Length: 252
Ligand code: PEP
Image (cartoon, rainbow, N blue to C red):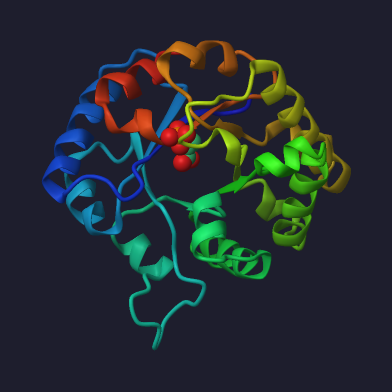
């Protein structure tokens, strides 16, 4: 059975102290859950990771980073390597988020390198794909996600790809309050699974967790998460309030 996951991307929000408090609230919610089949991840800013690792149950919550360097060490001022993240207790890294692709010009080659480094350290990439509004309006969303998958991930062996989590995040739905309809989300998730199956076979595709991201909130999550190929969500804004994030976790 595919793992269901709710992952919170805090982006560049909260101070360390605010983050520690938020993580502690999420932790008490998660530890009190009866259904342990739902994976919960939080991705605070880099500066918070060590502190938060000390204040959560690291078996119950997957401590996640929002990014990593595309090199493993050396003279790269301001960068944070995957090895450093691992030593801080990180178990997953978000890669290919549309904000990193758009504002920091991360291209498919950089993302392929980062994916390799993350997998080498036995950390899980949460790899984001998704089309812009122009691409959706042009009707080329399927081609866009196929290209994103094939350019950055299809050099991987089957044994590696199965350690990945995918997140379909239509760019037009991120932080805009506009959510993909449950049908639009299902259509894309089904297609993504088909593309994975064509390359790696049905077994791998059927077992791959694919999250939906884009203005998910307690009022719309239940319907989206109940779609056959949607295995949970990557959550931005609603992950910053423990109550909303808890309600999202309870949406399955
Ligand atoms: C995101 O940034 O991955 C995201 C889904 O943000 P939001 O939920 O705020 O749209």
